[in-house]
Length: 196
Image 1: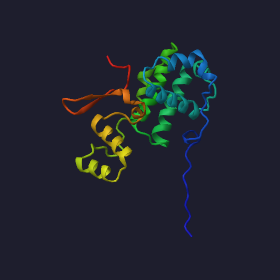
Image 2: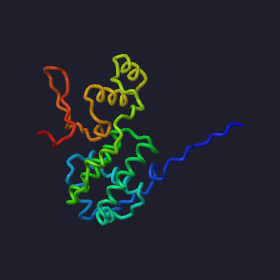
Image 3: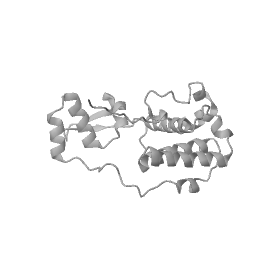
Image 4: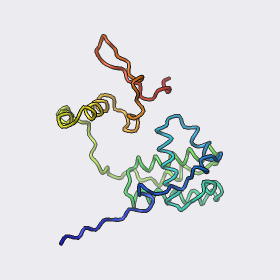
């Protein structure tokens, strides 16, 4: 008989975790200052997740607590979160930086100044990458296309030809495609309304 032992993830990593920030808290000026100052819906979702994760890791239930704690205590919580993310969860530097940038944005938009130079010193940048990222070769793409249905072929080709983020794909609508007849290609607008 084979016994399989599943390693338990921390409670704040479970997909069905009830995040600390409730709909009522999202109506507070603290949260609205934070979220409404972000341009992209994708960035809003990422920053919201990062703020929720920070609150969950530190057992903070109310968004008001984030600004009521003494500044030194907030800095300590952020540093402890960095340590937790790097040593326990073994997250990448980019994941840690996403959380830090979200917290920096939250506190900046609510006129609270923390010692970010000191906080960033705790991010270990010499951590080797877990995955060996590389661009897909033409052969890799051919293999994917050979086993994919039409929908998945379209998705792979959009990713391969544009380099967009995975979260950006769902926002593309037919109106975001413009055919360029002379070249027999399509121009794709990824973040509609954000062109300069």
